[in-house]
Amino acid sequence: MIDEQLETINRQLRTKGYKLTPQREATVRVLLEHEKDHLSAEDVYMLLKRSNPDIGLATVYRSLELLSELHVVEKVNFGDGATRYDLRSSDQAHHHHHLICTECGTVEEIKDDWLLPMENRIEKEFGFKVLDHRLDFQGICQVCKSKAKDNDHKAVS
Amino acid sequence: MIDEQLETINRQLRTKGYKLTPQREATVRVLLEHEKDHLSAEDVYMLLKRSNPDIGLATVYRSLELLSELHVVEKVNFGDGATRYDLRSSDQAHHHHHLICTECGTVEEIKDDWLLPMENRIEKEFGFKVLDHRLDFQGICQVCKSKAKDNDHKAVS
DNA sequence: ATTCTAAATAAGAATCATTCTAAATAAAAT
DNA sequence: ATTTTATTTAGAATGATTCTTATTTAGAAT
Image (cartoon, rainbow over all chains, first blue to last red; front, side, top):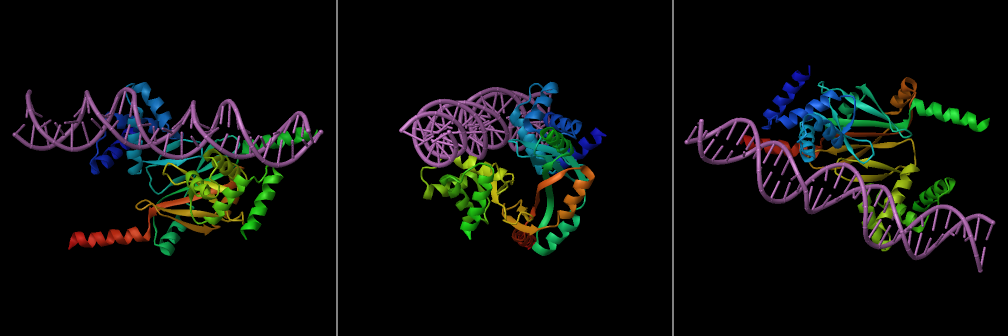
């Protein structure tokens, strides 16, 4: 499973004249093993250090940047200082959107294709060829909402 | 017009116990005068310097952060290193989305309410209270698309 | 197999955006 | 008028990211 995806990425790299170096492969592996998380470059670096103690942070940044250009990962920004790198599902058509809680900072993912009609409309109306999109919602998650309710009760009593 | 909006913002600030200091007022004015642009903190700072040579960059950051908490401005991130600050239209229900060209970097704005049904669905399905959202499309703008076509012609001829 | 060349890496310095700190000022409350 | 509190300035500090230089590596050409 992981090896299949690696092979796909390997082909993508070679098509563009890049090679899948050990460092790049290790980086991709880490991303594949943490598909659900939203890792920062530093996070990836720390995880990589276990298997590749000699890898440099700059190399991680370079690898992630390259993977981003190949649309293997997406750069995401949740407003804390760091860029995060999301592996894109092999199915290029499906994007995942985010529910970001402004109280506790948790990020929930939702998958959906709601935006396809919108993309078509944009291409027609603006002549803009959509390659990618990003949709994030900010608000209060269920957990924080019920916490807030509890506190209200306490305040009243 | 500008003064009305300033007055509204002033009220919002005072409601939360903040005051509209000269620096904050100047910051808001700059934003109002450049509503179409996507200014970084540094951009705002430079523009402010003309009228307020003594203002400090940290103050600009603090003012923008405060305005962001009040939802007067939105923080936007286009993937170049800097956070940009967009004045939100007085009509809180309308958000603007962005068409970001990956070739030339231009950012076009589109206004739309397409997402309201989606927000309702998220509240029902996930119990997540949506306060704000952000929708950006990346792709190739009309101009770059025709440029690319021209180059194809040249290559063939 | 050896040599050559271009790509990739490590290490750490450098840069850039942003935040923090301490001292000074201004405004509001007493 | 005095005290308290919020705000600002200036510059130092931080943290993420990029750059630089010397070194290593992989593959191509001999």
